[in-house]
Image 1 (cartoon, rainbow, N blue to C red):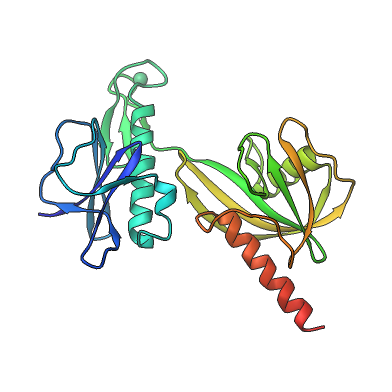
Image 2: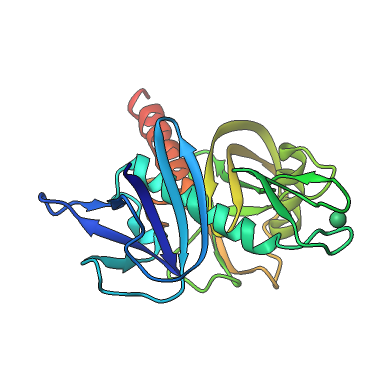
Length: 258
Ligand SMILES: [Zn+2]
């Protein structure tokens, strides 16, 4: 029986089909040598194997590409399966031992492990983060982050802390990083973000008051930008770009109706 083989050695292994389109390969048996880790997981009627490869090999012609760079180049189904595979491999390598007693954990199902000493079953954990378009009329708040040195502006985002709702987390994060207050928080959508095991939860929120005062440790610069004069923004792999694009369409529509 053929399975989808999702190989990682830091980067993802992909092949080209006859139309030169990027694909996750299918094999009956693993074509590479020794693997660090192999995890089986079904996705619908498809059988996937996430494989952490010890060494790259040229047994099969293909390319090794960072997963993020595969967005929009792999089909969305293949990209989703590769994302899940990367998260599973990360989860597996981080949970070899029981957090209570230190015993070697055993696999129980494709998405759970248990400790034979404590008899405790555990599942993969995600770290949720909130991200938002913050707008004031025709302007959007964009910043450059100090922690990610990239040549583009981003939205405000941050991890949800224990005991917080997503909305509370967003209000706190924005207040801490920019000093402003929000109103009319609207849910937009979410995106699995396997770098390494996060989920991004997106919102649109309106400026409610306060002076911009950036947190020095987090933000190098930023400000309000008009929807029709944006600086360089993230690529289409991210929910932040979908959020910005959706808000720009909203503003275009609102202004065309005036
Ligand atoms: Zn234990």
